[in-house]
Length: 131
Length: 304
Image (tube, rainbow over all chains, first blue to last red; front, side, top):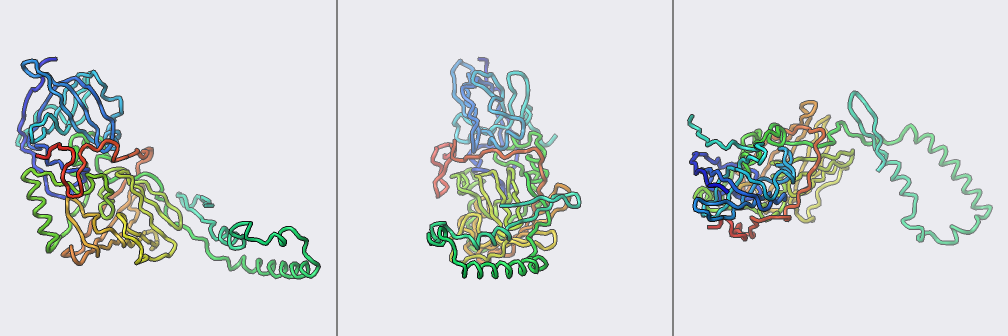
């Protein structure tokens, strides 16, 4: 596996304090940051209330880190073209996520590029709202 | 249930045969064992035969006259059966916006979702929660423990609704936490002694082609969303009407003299999605963010 943690991008996104519809609070994620990571999938949990991508990410010095990336529910993703076969163990994928605030290797998925180059969700390009 | 569908004026209109069913049921013993065996097995005497003949004649005559006086069969003025989603939300557009904002699904698109005007301790408590969350503290409501949202959050979606409509009852199913509201149209009232529930007790009636719903008996802990709470005096009225070929408008008014400074008025537009099917949503299947009733994470994820 190649170097995986490509970038840590500050985007300046703001969360309005409205009565949003979410299964749980997302305050544990740093929604002002986006990270782009590459890794090899070990498990794709196509489950409710959230789906999860488990992957191994190789660091610059060869160390391997297990990341847990939380994504939307089956109810939501299935309406966006996802299926339980969209991601498979062994897939090498690149994804963008909001990282956990506490430094635990995990995050909230925003977009992913699959091995065949197909992209789902938010762009992997850094968001620069002021431009 | 014997429901006959008649195509009228370009739409299905349902007629309900429940009246005939009730008549038949009234004359039928609850169980065959309730009828004395001698009556079922012995031959009637000639006196009984004469009486029966006379009664049959009376019944025949009455039946003829009843044909002209038959009670009007209950009907329903609309056909809203099918799958509906919040109009213009990610469920409607299905363009990738859900994945782009997980946990905040459809937030940018939800139409006319106003916030309630809280007061007194309900306001100060909610302000404290929002302040803590802005500072990074994870604040969950009961939804994180897979407890149903109930009313009034039922209409917040974000997933599919399924309406099943008959003349005497309308059921509305919400995918999220597999909730079902039952709206009774048979004239029954709220039973003040009944237990409060997450979706409350709903009775409704038609005013022309508009459905008016009154919902009471809502649990005090069903919440208003984002940690906002209400009292046991919450009461909800709704008006649902069709505003397009495949578009419904839900107008909801929430009152709570203890928690709200003014009635909370909100609107939701629902679009019919032909071809969409309900997905199973078992919240406890893999809930790795579970909290306890004090909104404290039990998984350790993001709890620092």
